[in-house]
Image (cartoon, rainbow, N blue to C red; front, side):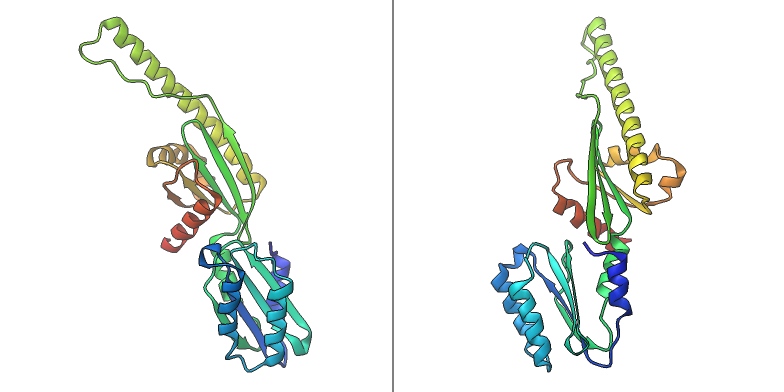
Length: 249
């Protein structure tokens, strides 16, 4: 994961020599390492700097582990400057020669996924995620009382059964209320502990609304978006939705 300091060091670098900035999408869905290296070679073939081509290709051949979904590389061989940043978020392939590193794609990424808290909530529990500098830093979960759907009695039910059904439904509603209250309390502590600056809430439309409405005004004002998502969603699913919602706001 890159840090504010590493980003600042790259942002502040300048030289009297050309600086090459390369962004390469390394998502597994696009192919294996050899496929990515082929795309890279096609990007570099028009680069009029043989020493930079050699340095960058050497990095991808021997140092990059291909574990991320993208990578940003900044190189100025004549000034002995070389930095790289693995990314968990895919970016478009891109190359540029200038007097300074091209960091606009990184800063755009940080606008979407920085100091961000995400809560994926249902009536029984929640999964919470903390994202910073484009990476998921931490996740936690909470599970409350088990809930179940209780049918109300029909008009043909006996009074005793109908009353029992109503009592069961009321008890389940109280369980849900307690669960959501505990989830909100847990989420508030999580968000405050990580100094969250914006929040996204995911789940069914009804669960999102109930969770959101019970938050303190301070946290409600931090909500940057909501979206529908299953509690069994993968980390990639969550991140994809975050980026999708961010682009819409």
